Amino acid sequence: MKIVYFTHSLASCWNHGNAHFLRGVLSELIARDHDVRVYAPENAWSLTNLVADHGPEGLDAYREAYPELGSVSYPERPDVAEMVDGADFVIVHEWNDHALVAAIGALRKQGASFTLLFHDTHHRAVSEPDQMRAYDLSGYDGVLAFGETLSEVYRGWGWSGRVWTWHEAADIRRFHPPAAEGPREGLVWVGNWGDGERTEELETYLFEPAKAAALSLDVYGVRYPQTARETLARYGASYHGWAANAAAPGLFAQHLATVHVPRRYYATILPGIPTIRVFEALACGIPLVSAPWDDSEGLFRIGQDFLMVRSGAAMTQALRDLREDADLRAALVASGLETIRARHTCAHRVDELLAIVARLQTDQQTPARKDAA
Image (cartoon, rainbow, N blue to C red; front, side, top):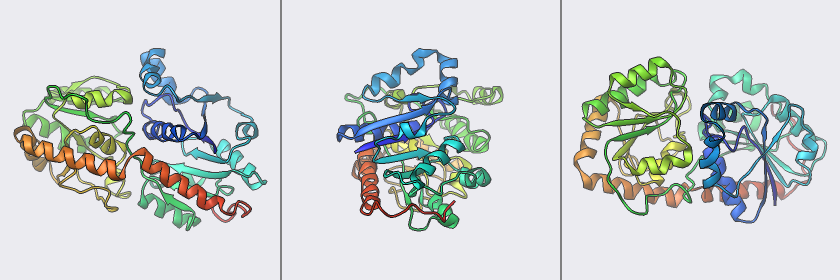
């Protein structure tokens, strides 16, 4: 099958978490002998920022980890018909320009034979609904949403029967425990500052507990303003700046544990969406403690795959327990790995995706929906 994916960036993961999952999924599709083509806009903000901060060598880790992947950049006014020529299946990510999204949908409405899906992996449907409703999806066959609560939003917008919950997952070809265990110490947190969406939560569930539990804390990520760096310094945490996602398994392998602090939207009005770092951390075999969120879809076994706490004091105690109890750490690692490998790999997600496409292609003559927007 010829598959075309329109992304914001495949090469850059600078403040662009979808690149993590996309790389794993596309790698799996290629391994299954599908013909995959990826398009990304010229001067994409993620790529521009990465190169500005780290130069062209900032892309080395991606290229070394994913030699089979590549993408084609397109100008501001691309020839969309040429880009999708011969495609059987087209996916358009939600970080694309409104005009591009509409142009691809228009081709489908005009009779193009490819199956066309919109892929939403962000909280803007609830945080900026007008911006998301402005996308013209009238030519699309359906929507892939990365959580059931997000799917519910689309159902409310008229997509009942044409939206599928498609969670992120771990690329276990790259995200796995180290081949040989070495020394581990302290905590690691790999994440971006969050535009004020979790500032208070980071202090409550990460910075204060790490200090109280007498565990060193290494922080990796981007968009940390000066005030954030001052906060980290006040708690004795070490800030290391951006780290390529391909480097994350090595970082996890050096540390005793990690912490998940969901952005506020995923802990409140879009519950049930853990985001990809949980999948990746568990796949790498590092004990994880999470700030509160509602696993409404039963993706994990809370208390077995990872610990979840409801207060900063409880986080401090959990970190102390992990520091002192090697058996607890080993049990969490074993359980987390079991769940990832049984349910949450990119191979599982490709199976789900191909099943959706097969269902839609059983009657390719059926016109695309005209009543959804």
